[in-house]
Image (cartoon, rainbow, N blue to C red):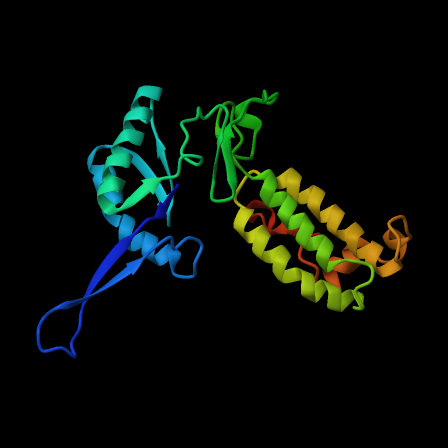
Length: 244
């Protein structure tokens, strides 16, 4: 959304007799370790001012979204945000600041959020999940899915000299971390597909070829129960209680 242009902090120096502050200036502190903390310090007044004006603001570090009822209200929100941020010494990122309709969706913190278009064939009284006609849904971004799959590929190359149990031990933190982050999104079908793909990657590593007899000699249940492979689908809260 924005970048730090030149932010000054005044901190009293107790070692000095005179009560003169030390002044620090951070320029272009983007993606640094301290960047989220600086963003929260700097942008807390921005949160307050936007909410005082009646805008529904959601912010994490320097990424934020304002939900509006009309395009006119959205344009007014962008103008108000620009004025407030200018006073704080930061600016809107021209490529990342957009006004979009929820029907087309928007990306936020690794998610794609949009209104569902698919027609539901069952009446709402028979639908046990949270799926509803025209409801809002969150999905992992395509870029996030591709990055995750690339990381799995790097860890399951056939030339990696690890036994299957050791390979799974190396793979599990990635699976658990990614799955825990997205488990409350609309990911049931995606997680099911990825689980099958991950199992095939492990078979390919074990038997050194993509088409193999892993399904017979090392079935998925063995990988999950005996080797402790993380099952993405079982991370979903509504499915966690079910048996394999």
